[in-house]
Length: 132
Image (cartoon, rainbow, N blue to C red; front, side, top):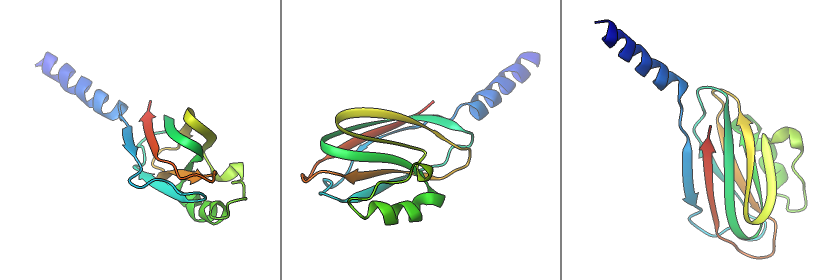
């Protein structure tokens, strides 16, 4: 009976302490110049460090933005020449080719991975978000 309690407790600890996140995809439609597109990601049950990898053939800006900040951020991002203030994003990175960046997502906080095409070319965008 003691070993059953140990196995049960171990399983419970494993399930509560381990929230795996791995999202990989390609945007269904290429990102046109100046276009902004967001991908909703489920909130973590505890604070979680995520690594975002992006692959594109033209310059793209990528952001991690909380749901609470999304409306304000969207108004700014919809203006092609505007820069997003750092207090509206959990993490951000501009790049071309393949690039990565990290951010920390607060517990129980809904957030978006947001892309903005900052070039004059249409580009496909592939991405992955992996939680640690």
